[in-house]
Length: 193
Ligand SMILES: C[S@@+](CC[C@H](N)C(=O)[O-])C[C@H]1O[C@@H](n2cnc3c(N)ncnc32)[C@H](O)[C@@H]1O
Image (cartoon, rainbow, N blue to C red; front, side, top):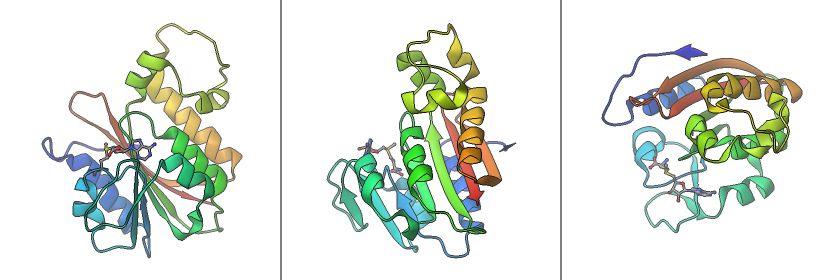
């Protein structure tokens, strides 16, 4: 994964830069923003594109937003209509990422993009590793490994690599950046069969 320097400390510049790079890699982007929120990213990146947003809160603005728990939507919707999945979560986007990778059909040669925001280190300190990730990193439920959160970067890479390999996908391009306090990671992936 390529690291790059922060481009803007005040307005989520790294998040926006990663999404611009993802969009450049897609011939015809179609966006599913699973954590739609206030629309900050939408305003800067997705305004002129085919777009669906999901949020468990009711949001009434000009966007095409469905009020739903994104996990419920991802488990039943036609995911092939989207090729950019935006997972701007507060904590962990990996549950949603797993559902998409396991459910979406990938056509050979088709690039599919993921924009992820995560605070795995913090999440692991509070509640351990998300259960869906355990088997990919060789751990079992109930295992108590002291200071495991110090290895969040390694665990994340292992999880992504093993999950994609299992599903026959490869990473074409990847970027990672952090916020100033190093509590959050912003990740961009282009995957392909
Ligand atoms: C970090 S904010 C997203 C910010 C947004 N991407 C933006 O650019 O303004 C997280 C949002 O995700 C929503 N959310 C959290 N968990 C969710 C879930 N399981 N399903 C749908 N929405 C969820 C919250 O209501 C909140 O609005």
